Each structure stands twice: as structure tokens, then as C-alpha cells.
Image 1: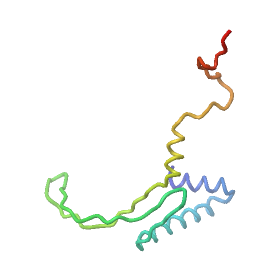
Image 2: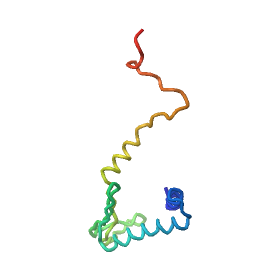
Image 3: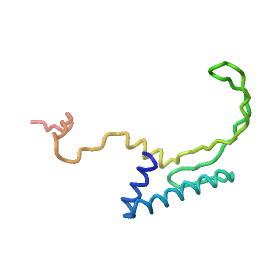
Image 4: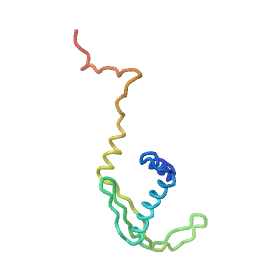
Length: 115
């Protein structure tokens, strides 16, 4: 899903114009970025948390020339999904039951009555 898809989904669900939905989505993203830049942690219950992690300086290599390059210390954004989000994602991996139409499922031996 892209940002444009997310804006369209918000627009459809909330029954707003696309422009109004774009303002909402942008405001949420801007708030998250501002909080991370300030060093704050963002926690959205049932979804997950955003925070920054500090990376130590290190010596890297230029892949083209092989020359050693100093990589400075930096903060990187990090997302940790909540247990609820993990459960929803993992449970959706199981096939959904048929919703009518099509061929009915073949009964298992336990479901077939004995004559």
C-alpha cells in the first residue's frame, strides 16, 4: 500500500474529499516524524511503537572501490509491532472459510456418516 492508497482508503471510509484525507494522513506522518526527531517514543496501542535507535560509528567499505570509509554515528527510526498486530497478521495467513458459491469442500472421513 502506498501513501496515495492510504489517502484513498481514508477518503472512502470516512467519506471525506481526497484533499481532506490527504491533510489528515500528512498530519499523522508529520507528527510521528517530529516526535522521532525530538527523541520521543510513539506508542499506538494495538498497532506498535516507533522509536529511534543509536548506531555506533563504524568503518565501512565503498563497494565499488573497496576503499575504507568512516560511517558516523546516527539515529535510525525503528518500528516494533504490538502483539495484537502480530497475531492479526499471522492469523490472516490461514485460509479463510469459503463464503458461498463455488464447490463445497470435500468432507473429511469423520464427517461422512456410517451406513
